[in-house]
Every structure is written in structure tokens, then in C-alpha cells.
Length: 302
Image 1 (tube, helix red, strand yellow):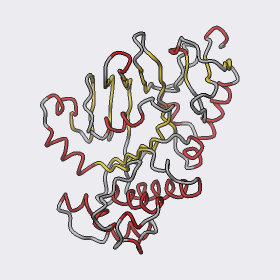
Image 2: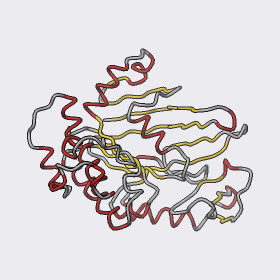
Image 3: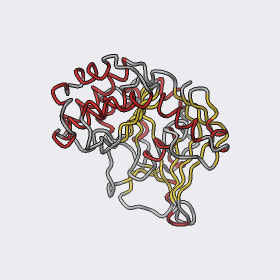
Image 4: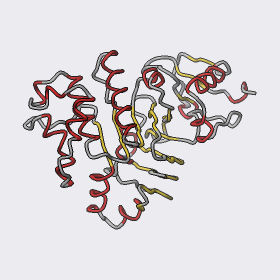
């Protein structure tokens, strides 16, 4: 396993401003790819920061990455070791690209290799060619279109052949055509490297078209007003009547996942107002803020 988490919790803020993310269990194997989906504010970026070893959990029964005990490293304040793990084994595509404006596109892509002291083996040029930005290598990021900058960011995240690729809404600022192109290129190139891929996105339809199994984050509000985001084993609904384990869900094809959700939704009562009992609410599919939410009344389920 590249990543193995169990009973991990990270909390930010206090009271009504508090946000907590709870991961019951999450195991990522080499070469697997997933889309991380959920309503806005549920903690997708927080989970990526946790996986990227830049956010420390307050509680964790188990957290291993590339055979390293991450819980112990955080407890012992081994920031040097955490930084080494990040630089060698992680690639991160930021929503805004994160390119250095004063450096050329080629220098930006080569940055992770340069920091690791890796020799010039032509990988930067090969990535640029496959991502269709070769003619822009000598330019500064400001001279590129938004789509070109995102492709350069993807190339930089892959230049040092990381074992784990994380991407935070990499297509959010792109039009639909460019969004699918960038997503497909990112998955194809990272797949050739054998990397495990986790892509946070608000666009479930795009994720499904790209063949990404979905990892859902659910969101609820605690008694004191704080927000709780949860990644549970299985689908993001709170029901003892219907169960789906993580392993079984991930073993289904995209079509089978869609069929299961369709069957589930046929058993769910639709409300158009947001009741106070937020623990009973989750959002499915492509619902946007303000849209109707689905409530799971256990008494109506078989």
C-alpha cells in the first residue's frame, strides 16, 4: 500500500468556526486512481493536505505512507523526514497552478528534479511534448493561457516520477473542453509512471467520463455549530439499512456505481428545504449549493 490511514482526525478552528475532518479508513495501492468528490466545504482540500503531509492530524490510530510511520514522524517533529518524503514521492497539482512567475516554464517543470539533484535525462522535454507545451518552454507563465499553465503544472508535478499524485481541482478554471483534455492528459501521463492518483473535483460527470472511481466526502454539522467532514468506508449516506464497503464499491465499474446510486436514489425521499437535523443529510451527484438535498429516512428503506 502507498497510503494506509485508519481513524484519522484533523481539526481547525473552534466552536461554530471549527472544521473537523474524519477519515475512518482509506487505503490506496500503487497505480490506483480516484476522484475525491463532495459538497463545497466538506474538506477535499484538507484531505489532500493531509495526504500530502503538509497538515498534521490531531488524532490517528494508523497513518503510513511509503512504509513510513507518519503518526510518529509528526509526533517527533521530524519535519526534515516529512519534507524528504514529500519531495521524493509526492507530486501536487494546485488549483491555481502555483507556477513561479519569475522562472521559465522549463525551469518550473524541472524544479522538483533540481531540488532532488536529479540529472537531466530528457524527462522534462518528453513531458512537455506529451502535454503539448514544448513551444512554450522558454516562456514565462504569464505568457501562457490558463489551460497551458495547468498543463505545465501537471508536468511539474510529474517530472520527478512521484509515487503519489495529488491534484486539487486541476480543471476548475477551465472550460469544459479544456477541462477534459487536461484531466485525460494528467491521468494518462501519471498512469504511465505507475503513480497512485487522487484528484479532488467538483465535477463528478467529468470524473466518470475519465473513468475515475469516486471517493465521497460527506458533511454534517455538530451540536455546537462546527462542521464535520467524513470519509467513510463506502457511500456517503448514514443508513444501517444499506451498506457498501469501500473494497466492494471500488471493485465496481463506473456503470455499476451509477446503477447502484440510481437504485438508491429511487428509495430516497427528496426535500427542498434544509432541515435542522443536518446529520441526516448528504448531497449526491451534481447538486450545487442551494439545490435540493437528499435525506435518508431509515423507516422507508427496505
